[in-house]
Length: 124
Image 1 (cartoon, one colour):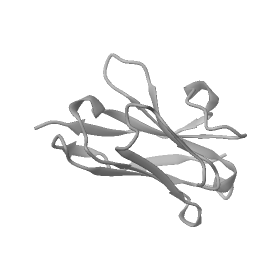
Image 2 (cartoon, one colour):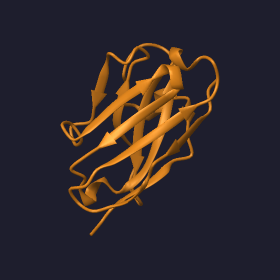
Image 3 (cartoon, one colour):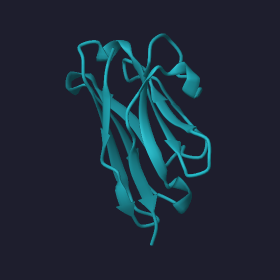
Image 4 (cartoon, one colour):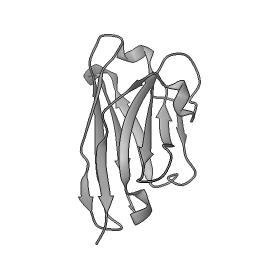
């Protein structure tokens, strides 16, 4: 089973960009589909994006399509989330997650390994 550690969060102005990274331990990283979720205070955790183990398949929430890009580098056991045109509504704690099996599901319950989260705040 992998362990996940997110990094790259911070404070950014509206319209700005930020890149998150998620480093995975273990030698089985390539067998996992990876996802990013976020949770704002008082709200439920919501799906942001997912990527297949090959990196060829991706899935995005409608709210971030065209603004966020998920990618992975298996040689570095790392998955990324490049965020641009950030809005105050993107403010949340962002979590990296891993799941076995096929399907780029947006359901949080389908992911069985989670990182500790990294805070992203979009504010002027």
